[in-house]
Image (tube, rainbow, N blue to C red; front, side, top):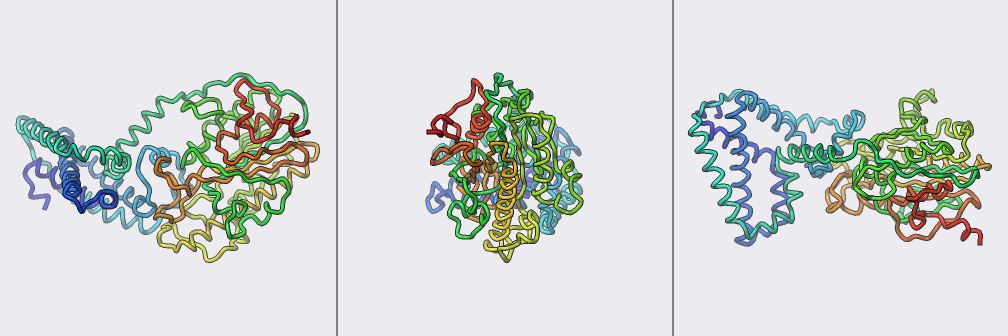
Length: 514
């Protein structure tokens, strides 16, 4: 059909219609669910939005094909294929392609992204990407005179402006829902938001802003172990009242306290930044491990099976590849590898003050069932598909609960190791970068903007253990990720101009001794 088109404006219009029909089901689903289509105003809104989408996309495609010719056609082919992949993730996981999600995608490594591969994504790519692309590539681009081009551009702009002003009564609704609407319009959701992501990234300080010098006030031996969880939500921890016993070990350990807490973001890079910064400024100040490392009296150890943190500049940094050298079995596939040789590494330290950061990946989806050894496959049956909507919610939650059970084992083992170092005052703090959706409201995993994110993606565990007589804990009702920085300084007796005692989870030591 497209081969017979001999006018460029008509070709651009047909491509725009194809783009609308193939890739905008989620967009219209949102409009239909949030606008009152039983009224005349609602019908006018739906009709006007449809016309605007068709005309504006045709307008951009028209200009692109006129100026870029064959290269413009290849750009549209690229759009079609990215649209197909984006549509798969929107329909399958309920994601929103905004600036936050673009950052999440760009910070995803191959190991994580490959876990999303399935037959369904290939079907989407073929039906919604490759087939329309072949049709487009076989279509010649009609020639158009410059005068006719300018007339078409001018008349289109006049029509669009008239339609926009005619819908002034609907501006408020569009503005209220602009973030979600913009994140569902193809291909501009990822084109515009990728540009926004890199623009905001360029505004940030590439070099972390130095913090004022710190000072250790005594030489009492102290260890602070910060365990950063991945996608762990508090409501699935039995320590927080969950009906399943997902914390059989931690619940039996003395001096363990769980606090209610909320994450400041729903994706890893922002969540980790909040955990490691001294306060929410919007700027990139020195993060906690870098700040303490420059103090010669503090030893900092970072072990990770994950990614997404700001640049860590310390001597003792070990990733999964480094840790793999410590084992000969398949335990390197699981987060317990973070504990291998850790006690010996602590004992080898020549410093009296030690910060250990363990960055886990235990509860990251969609392949929850691959995140723990088989012996922790206690809650059955489990979801074994990357297309989470194909599983029952029971299967999905069971698989996720097994990751929490495994987390319980890792934390209990860590506490046991710390107890074997009686010469140190020790504490362990576990919290997550963000929560996780498990099918509630047809949402899966994480990454929604905080303004519209459900509590499942924001409510996180904040679990603390202290060695006997080391220090006492406050009874705060709810904490944030920003409490971590000041709590570490407090426990390790580090004096700093930026320290805020009110942000520490520990009681003042003089008060604790009363």
